Length: 426
Image 1: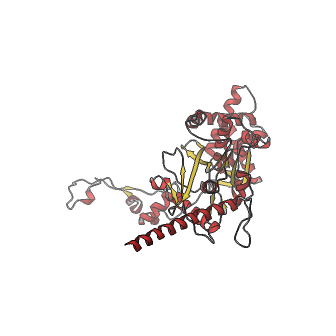
Image 2: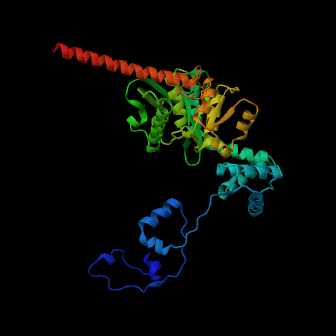
Image 3: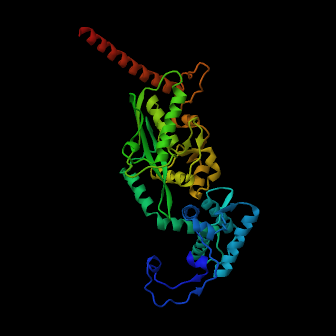
């Protein structure tokens, strides 16, 4: 920083400036220093330096933000095609046909995680072009087709999927417990994403709930064992508020419920499992089983509105791989927030399974929208008198909560009578 401000480089002992008396007898002449310095880094590092170092903002006054993705329009698609052509000419790759370029554009949207965006990570695009050319060369093809783009993507995944394969093996052997058939009370398949740096993939996790009469409210087992992050803890509080607002307008909540991610030996963070946790809890309260052929992902607010989450493609594909272990049928699927539909850029294999009706992707706006697909029962709309119609899921939940509240009240009255009787005897 001194060199930039003084516009010269001084060759000296770094500790000399801190000494009271100089011990240097010979001091080399300063070297003129007149340069422009460009710092490249991520936004987090920029704001860290900007706020902690006053001289930083004086020395680096010009800031330029670069987008890591662009709109997917005709102009930028044309630029993508031009990039492919330029790269082929520059490093001597085979020509890419029209379908291959279209496949590259699709990959750009997958990197951007948005159907209407393209990634600006051109290093990754260039790596894909090189590998696709390699497979075309092995087949002695004069053109790189969409088949070779698909081959390159599959081979790249194969080289980095060791951890994913081990997890799937454990699921198949039954070491990791994940059900994809039948229906169970108080149990659901949640979804998470494991990011290894060079590879991201989705995993299915069993979420369970137990409920009984009590006053402790909803107990987050991960929080009690200090394995839960702040965002996940907030999600549990939102869940509690939703439950009270929807079912306790006339009768106070009098229950104790426990929620946990089974076979979790690390930490849990984020709110993307909130919807799954709500369904698990409501199933445990009502006694209505949930279909294990579905997995659920999604955040929510206190009013039951379902909110978008990240990693939706990896989560869907992760559960798809789990379902494949025991054979796909038309009952398997994933429930996602409707706001995430624009982010879907799935693998060809998943798209083909959905098209054939072997795998389902359901989108929901509100928590109630997922109840019937998971239980086979209508959710039930609240009536003017504050009750729910008989034969609906919400009716069973409200009825059970009333029973729990009455059990607590009766126990309290019984204890009160015993205390009064004892006082009278004394």
